[in-house]
Image (cartoon, rainbow, N blue to C red; front, side):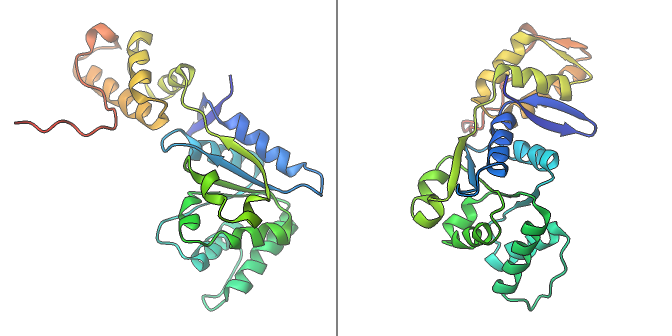
Length: 246
């Protein structure tokens, strides 16, 4: 089974997606010099992309930055500098910050992972990342939503430097079992009930976790140590807003 890993203190749950992302990063690290080194990891919200990215960042000792909607290019470069442990001045220009990041990528030999990359694409500021790659030849991993590959086509000079497009996969039933084993320590949730949780989650790791916690708390309230499908009569969280009551 292809897995990703969610870390819970010192424990981990083996889930899908990390092997494909990890393989993509290693392919970029070990590529011949004449090949490009950008990797695009994309998929719907809630499918565990950020979990996989965090695991890969820890495993490969990569720099990891999660973009925010309000960030400017300058703030992004400053955030990367902070992640790298570099000292910068608030008066430093984009060019200076970019050179600092580029030099550190060269010196460290480490990959750079940028999560929520759609925010930069939507602001038409993609070229700054291409500049970092061109200057350092370091692997740069771009993580975003399912339409990210098509969005990148607007920037051929960046799109043409993608080594691999890696689609995130929906959570499998084995993923749900692993999440149950990690997060539900106080109550035993039967496979029949877990299967329903998995089905309504529609591939979302996040919704599986939300429903597992709902079931566990309900079982604790009912003073049950074990709970199965026959014991469950409450609605699951599906991500849909409830119907308005008349």
